Length: 140
Image 1: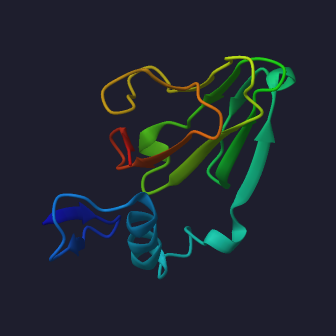
Image 2: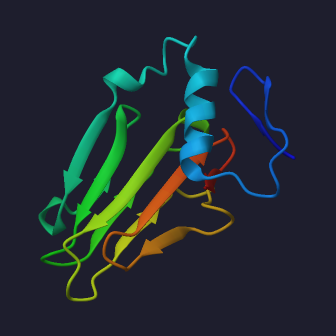
């Protein structure tokens, strides 16, 4: 059984499931847990498309899906501080990668993504779902 905590510290349990829960199932459970919270309203979140001309794109809490267009080169996305984005989900998606470019998710000093400073996506159509528990970014 997997157990996750929502920001109100209530448990979300995946009972009767083996050792895995799909990212979409986790997202649906987290969204359901967040529904009562005014700050987390998925209808108000945004889809952002970034390319090489954007420099390091600094994600903001109103973003939800960040699409990296790698047709012209590498793309970097800096996630907000985990402590300031507690309970937020970001989905990073790669498109247009035909020449071996990468999309790098990076964090501020003191934060980590599953214990690392960066997470790199290098395959076309790759995706990364990250969740802030208030202490660090977790990959799902």
